[in-house]
Length: 116
Image (cartoon, rainbow, N blue to C red):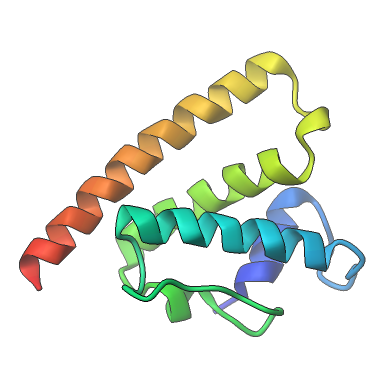
């Protein structure tokens, strides 16, 4: 499985071998992981990455939930990383989609907690 950092970089349009923005992207990824932890998604102690070695299965192994987490992470990091490149109507659309994923991820996390 692909690394978390590499997959987010690809979604941002940054090649895997271009490392200049890695520290900034990692900070944004970890901020989103903190938000996900507050929603109850992922490990109960939270999760963070330091480089490109962490993979998505390290964070969560539920394939269905994982796909939403990847999309959620992508939009959140995109907004944090380069907000000036996003037009106002696109930003509004991203924010609506983020809110929907937050609600769905929260519901999924609650269901997982009830089943454990």
